[in-house]
Length: 417
Image (cartoon, rainbow, N blue to C red; front, side):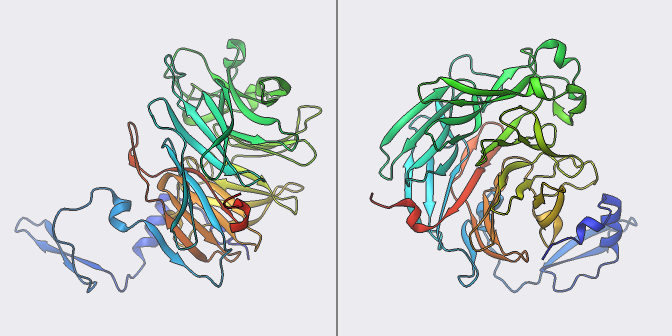
């Protein structure tokens, strides 16, 4: 069942307020009454009506902790049973939890977050953990994700191998031949930078960063490469109006396809595309206004593409809201989408992921708020877990952000092997 009702509406703040004005709210937990203050004004008084005892005393200042973390909902009859793998972005540890939200295993991937921190984790076919780390060094690059360390770690935390690349960022995949497919950053030549429109003035003087993709051996030999500057016309890919001109494309996801082509996402120019490995040209793209700062495209068994459409600064709406969409690349038609029943309740401006599960459900990470949940094809939430592992980020504050999360069958981890 496709949740298409919102797509047929004009989503604007004015329209939202008009709709709200005509709604009668019943069963409210809090009633607010205006009382005359003697000067023709109104003073609001609140009465608790929920029947639940109020918490009296010091108030937890982090909203998600105050609301509750860990497992918040679970319908065993409708979920895909397995283990969930995730890590708090820029933390030190990766976690596996079972369907009850109990921690099954942890990997401490670094002991000094000032020098190295976790970006993302995923599971390899042999049951080991594949971790992408950010390495902070003296003279670090101007954006936090550049400077990569990739490693394979077994169930007990033993490092099988490690690969360092100062230009790697965001995403990397282990290919069937054992090589690595990685995203790298490079500076766009000045003559091309001048042709890129959009964005706000740059915050650094090193030039405009852009992306390239490389297949490398574990010894660091590059055996194939693709550069955005060679295959994307600057005038055709303007930067989002509110993003800084420090970066042009901002690649945030790559996925190798069975035929060797590469599925890729460029956040700053609202583009998902399939790169033809032989020609280097795009075989297919999807762009704004359908997409807005999206993440984590993946190819489905039916050939369709699943995308977490973050929805920041949408071109066709005055509202910021996230959705997950399944797209037929033959027609670029959206054949399925998930939007929350209350549209503004589902929104992650950065990071995030979506994964189609074997039972047809979709596993979603609303990354900025550490919310991991599973929905049926009809959009029913059947499992939800709030990441309880917070870090103190110097810019974002006290956060439980998750770059991506994955649900795997229990046996995929080959526990104890």
